[in-house]
Image (tube, rainbow, N blue to C red; front, top):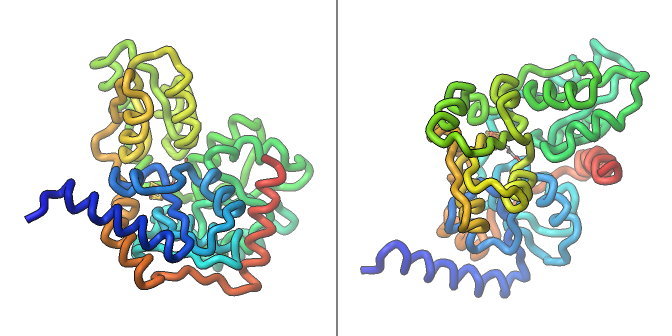
Length: 308
Ligand code: 13P
Ligand code: SF4
């Protein structure tokens, strides 16, 4: 009988062999489970992962994250095969906006520029003018011309943060990330009382109440950079808790505390080593985007990459 760590090393070895056979690269989001983070060729936030997907010359991308992220990779690299090890891994925030919703919002605001968060399906991106991620939402809002109205979908908290930073009004869709809005101001204050010397870093999908308690507001990779550069030895982290594994691994001399123990994205945890191996063996589940959607969605992502 093998113990868990022996099983994981065996799976990791098989994954390495199959990866070579398939000329594949494994991209993983910062919220993935530790063993998946450990076998990734590249680990990052949504912006970094989309840049990496656009640049790699691998034939196959195994995307360990949620569906919209794998779709983004397929939009940016239509000549590659993009696999997601579990098709059920969705994003409840992305699912809060349908194409029908967006079309009727556009009809109510003719002439408005549509800015969509990367946490959206490819069809929503195809209906949008420009895309953004949590790493650049404020910069993109700032860069858009002030003359026309700006529709921001689907996350109202990220919209509120970007609007305040850029000092621009936005027409906002009422979506939210259930994981990030579950972190309360009281959660952060409780951790502050327990660790008074700790700095507080917050993801912009959190509520305004939590954002206003932060020493820094960042995408996950922005948090990683802050954690490395700060002189603080203790940091309270308000985002999905899977990211604390990477923070602790990269900064063994520092202590990281989750703002809220319950901040766990069940969809992100659906990807396992077994499923990654299965995906490589069976070349499944392939993410395919119809060409007319791919072309338009790529333009929205392309505008974002140009601005940033
Ligand atoms: P990042 O792009 O900051 O990693 O965030 C992605 C996400 O899904 C946040 O919940
Ligand atoms: Fe979506 Fe929130 Fe999960 Fe990120 S943490 S994938 S926004 S549900």
